[in-house]
Image: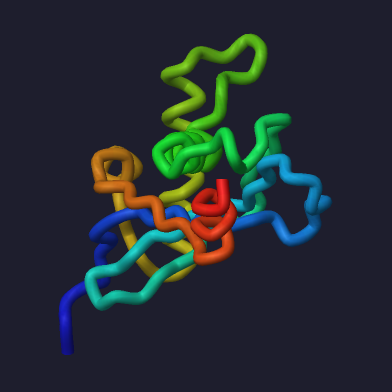
Length: 130
């Protein structure tokens, strides 16, 4: 039997938001997963995304990748909290999510992992049309 499962990287998958109007403006949903050393993905966040008044024609892959990393956190600090507290709370929350799946990881270790962004086919097609 193998050793304990560990997280090797974080992965955010971005694609066109299904519920957004098809009016040419950017609307993206993002799913954030932990990728384990055995290749499995464990869901961390699936309630993230963004909309913009920008059009797909004015949007680049690099912009989408950068924004995708930003929207999965850590979030801006709430009033009365510091950036350091906000970051610590974010990484602790993700570590607790993984603990719920039987994966023990230190929040600081999670923070240092590589974070890849993958764009879905529909999103790539929309950007390419622009």
